[in-house]
Structure formats: structure tokens, C-alpha cells
Image (tube, rainbow, N blue to C red; front, side):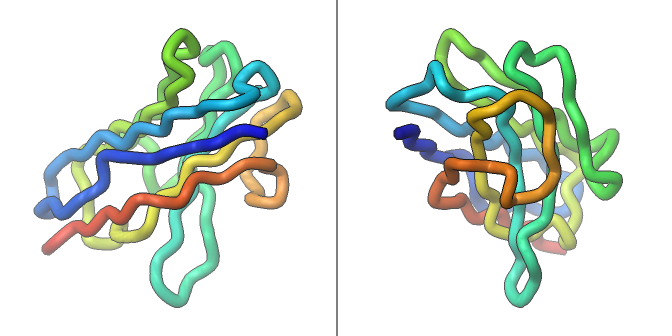
Length: 124
């Protein structure tokens, strides 16, 4: 089993920045690619970004390209999401997720493990 714990969410003004962290524990050797998703009230969970096991490959949703950066530190079993130039529409609960197989994926069903989520609220 793998446990994921997100942190770093909060309230920020539009144009501001936040850095989310996701610490993995348990059978971390089974983790391959990791991703960030978000879910706003009344909306479906949507893909934000994903990163390969080595960190050499990343994929972003069009809505966050150029503003968000995903990275990982495998020595610390932690993945990060640096969010800059935040907009009101970025407001959501952000979830960290981990895959136990290779290949970056954008669908939630492709991920085996999930964190509890962290709230990000951007005021306009």
C-alpha cells in the first residue's frame, strides 16, 4: 500500500503563487508516474499535471501550461506543484495521485492511490 499526504493549500489572491507538496509513504518503490488533479464544487475531477518516474517527462493540462510546474524529489518521495499567476478559476480541491505502472496518464481511473486533497482558494 501507498499513502499520499498533500500540503500547501490555502487562500491566495489572484496573481499570487502557491506550492503544493505530496509526500508518499509505504511501498514507495511501487510508484511510477505521479499526477495532480483538481475538483471544483459540482465539477468532475480534472487532470492538472503528471510527471514520469525519473522526472524527465511532464504533461500539463492546457489550462495551466506556462503557469504551473510539476516536479518530484525521489529521495524524499515527494512530488510538488508550483502554481504561479493563479486565477479564480483555479479554485478547487487539489489531489495528488500515484500510478503503479509506467506511462503518463490523464484519466483518474489510471491512478491507484490518492491523497485526501488540499483546498486551494484564489480570491479575485
